Image (cartoon, rainbow, N blue to C red):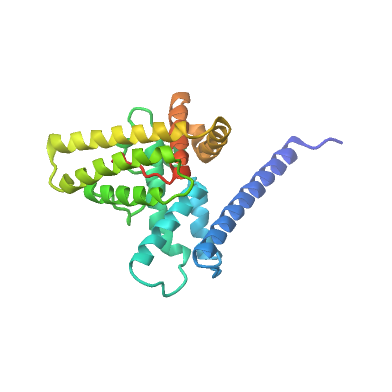
Length: 266
């Protein structure tokens, strides 16, 4: 006797639940391993409330690399405040993880709305307001943004994998940004809009050159990774919106490859 349709439906549903739980467990394990590495080998288990917290990141579609970047951001600030006193708990990193996810969403155009992640198509990514429920999140001011960009470019220069051809670009970009940073606090109205437009131009130039330094095989691998990152949101996207999000995700991964910041003020 064959399996009844309702039995097959129940079996499929159980498999889906099992797969989902397995994916969440794997996600939490990766976060736990990364946090252990950042804590110099001190193991902080992602269990109980911490597991629920990290599971919520997975459920929202926060890519692992985005979560890692948020953890990095917390540690950078922690070390700036003096010698580390105790291992960092994952809960301390939540606001930074959500901030970085918010920035990733702005850059790709992906937004969240209940009950399913969706992408709006009538605005550019930079025009959309945050949909991430993060009360601790605060958008950087323009001077703060420029300060972070200059620091990231300085760090990129120290990257041994950065092509020699790119150093001239970093010199030009750093010079432009340093000059802009000196007057950003007092820029208003049309002058501010001109500065922000200039930042977009610099960012586009930097990305164009960065992409030219990536061989075809590596770029194909980056594209596959980008598609995986935005996969949780694809069901709610129109074809053109998905194409834009895919290209933006590729750009972000290229930035990561060379440790380059987002210069545009989003």
